[in-house]
Structure formats: structure tokens, C-alpha cells
Image (cartoon, rainbow, N blue to C red; front, side, top):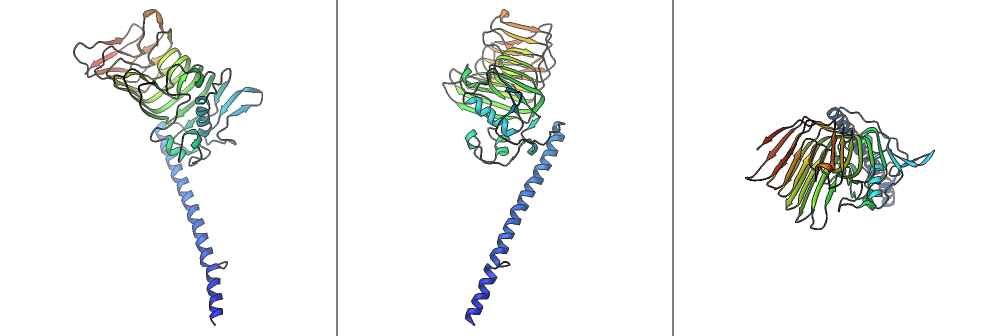
Length: 368
């Protein structure tokens, strides 16, 4: 009798319809339900973000996420087809692949806040690229996206983009970059690109949230929508959202809608709100904060975003198009205009603040 009971007990526990099998099936169904719930939540978030931006993105169909597609007829043409590709591209440039003499094309619009722009938004295997955890969560919170190219230092051409980036008239949406650095050795450069030595064209940055903060005695923080510093050319690009630079202690602070510092800008416009804070040498402009002593050209550009300078810094430069330029013959501005408000806050007595305006640049300036 005891043997019979023992046999029955074993069957109840371990049989095809036993307790352990039922528990296993229940666990599998629970996991499936959780995945379905996560997917449903993601779909609802996608709809919400598309309603907010007015831009509907397509679901990516990237067969090899994290690997740029090479054009069959041109080995020097690469295409980004997903957020995973963009993350890889940023890491690749930062680690020394400059893409010189090559073209990288954006295959479709990408939204960091949309699951449709990822092959797998919940992947956790991108630690080698600097994302230890859920990829979408890390890209849309905290420090967010790690820029394309090295963010530290100034004039690091070997770890910056040197090729042609063709935005293909697509958008990068909900780009978040928040970086704070305590460093007396390096400048901090942030934007989609940290430093640009190539050509960036036909790209729109929509609803960005970019913020750079530097504590330093001698260095500078550069925040821009397309690039932190532009050493070559940006054309046919626009930015919307918010951008800020904060120089703590005596760190210099520069910010611009397209780039904080730059050389050549053509057919670009800014809609983003730009705020530049600091106690020393604050330079801020709708298109770029200023130049670096080299010739700068701004042609057919305009600013509609609000430009604000905050702080007690001496030698501050604020402009609808650009703030600082070293000498009049180092800058060319042609067919540009500004209709964004310019606000200067916390101006102290005898502080030098230079507001740039000419016949090609209409400015409303408010002192607070």
C-alpha cells in the first residue's frame, strides 16, 4: 500500500500533468504575458511620442543590428538602419575609425523613445558600447546617448568623424545627452557628434535634450545639437528641443543650436531653446556660440529659438546667429536672420556683454 501511495505521489509531482510540469507551464505563460505586456506598453508609448512630435517612424527591419550595411555597389557607403547601428557607429568612431573618405547614410528616421526604432529595445548585451542594462532605458534617461566621437579634449581628429554623414533628409528624434565632468585637464564636447571634421548634411534633430556641465579652472564646455565643435562643414540641418552649457567655477561655457563652435554652416536653422551659464567667458548663439580664431562662414541660416545667457561672467558674447568671433575678418555672415528672443540674466555692474546684430540679424534683447 505504501508503495502504491508513493507511486501515486511521484506521478502527481513529476508526471506529464504533475505539479512541477504545471508550475513550469504556468511560469512560461507568465513570462509570455509579461513580454506581451511590455510590448503593449511599448506600443502605447510609441503612439504617445508620435503624437507629441508629429512624426511617425517606421519599424526597423535591420537583419544585422549593430553592423552598418555596406552598399553592394560602393564599399565606401554605409547605412544606419537602427538605433543599434547608431550606437555601434558612435562607439566605432570614438575608438578610432574616422570614416575618412567614406559616407555614412541614415536609412530611416530613428526615435530613441520608440521601440520601433530598435530591433530589440529591451536588449541588455550592449555593455561593450557603454550601456550596461536595458538599452532603451539607458538611452532615454540618465546620461543618455554617448556622442559620436571622443567627448574629451579639443582637436582630437583621430577619434572624431572625418567622412560625410548624409542624414538623407531623415530625423533623429528624442536625442538625450546629459554629461557632467569634473576635470581640470579636458574640454567637454557634446552633441550628436562630439567633434566633426567631416561634412554633415540633410539631417534634422527633433526634440533633443542636451546638457553639458564642466567644473574646471581653465577648460571649456561645448554643447550643440549637431556637434559640440564643428571643424569643417554642416549644411541643410536643423535642431529643435533644448540645449544647455554650464561652466562651473571658472570653466568657459559655449553653446549653439547647431554647434557650440564652428567653421562652415550653410542652410541651417535652429528652433531649440539654448541656455548658456557661467562665470567666465560665456559665448552663445542660435546657430553657433562662436569661432575658435579660424574663419567661420554662416550662409542662409536662421534662428527662431530663444537664446539665454545666465551668470556673472565677464567678456560674454550673445547673438541670434553667433555670439563670439575673434576678429571681424574671421567671420562671414550672409543671408542670415534671427527672430528668437535674446535674454541676458544676472548681469552685474560693469560686466561686458556683447550682443551681436547687424542688418542681416534682427534681435530683441532683454536684460534681467
